[in-house]
Length: 511
Image (tube, rainbow, N blue to C red; front, side, top):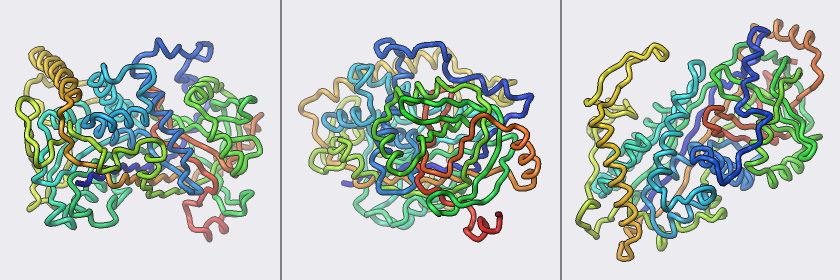
């Protein structure tokens, strides 16, 4: 019985914020105090430990490279899918996902399983909530299930409680084409139309579930780049965008690299790592020995520095099947029909258990007969036991839960923790035979300037600034979009040959 894992990200109009003189002070609010030592691993809290684990996952996936000249992916989106699978796994599959995600360091996930999911859910919500009024970050998850396939009631409740994840019934067996269209429309809707299709092929009729997550990000700048086309050193055409001013910058002599921070208007930052006299081999060497501690140290070491920047205007589109990559990194049993064990997600068709983990077929509010008219997806269920309060900061109504509701939630968490521990340790637990066949990760990132009309003004700014440091990305480099509040890497990119986001003829004509 097949399970398909899917993650999509869309990064559109990553327009980088170059501060004006009045706003330069704002970029000095770095995520770390530069005079502060990084906390000891034994004393860090769970949230920071999870963020570091996601960074470790990021570096491991990046090292796989997948033979692509340009690789862009979303660690948060990948982790979101794996978190939903982790919630339903036991035994070897559970242990391998824990190791793959880096959750075997800093805390005991076996004893704190529910608390880890609670923190992961909080971080997932914070990715969207803390994005700022000027950046748009949308994060969604959903599980599409064969309509007659049983999903445990407790798993469904936990997935909704921790991850606000919808469970939607489709018929892969009888009508896989309709299921394909439904899922693709769900992705289209939740990436603001940037990624029109996730499933290029009709799902296998034996598919029992497809676990998906989408992450859409749009960053906004206040001061546009100045664009001017030129050839880079690899003789590939790239549209370079120029600007100058004070930016977070650091030169690391130990790693022989430079790092530059390009702040977005809403509080996120794109960091660019440039090896000295970079080429493809030097970039690969850097990727092989970068650690999460290096990333933290580099970010925390940046200081406001006068810099002249040349950065490529580019568009990268990747469709990745990460199944083999995950196998190579130790996550093997999930993709093996003989050893995958997702018994907390489903009992399968043949086994029935009494008590709290009795099987319960899922239901959906989007019937297949009327799917085209119901492509409206919400993460939050209706809240009836609450008082609506107007928030003057967000200019929206929020729901204050009653004490009775909060007490019920605590009871639910205690019960869930006890039952998950009891159930996962049951040696008689039968394996439902559900395994992952694919892990599809679709990405699109488009980095542009705000517009060409402001080019002349920006050009004057560059000449006036005459910075002490020149940071030119016409050679291989790394970049990552970093959320300062959560310490999470939203997107990671390894660029060897930046492709122009405009036709080659336009690049030539811009000279």
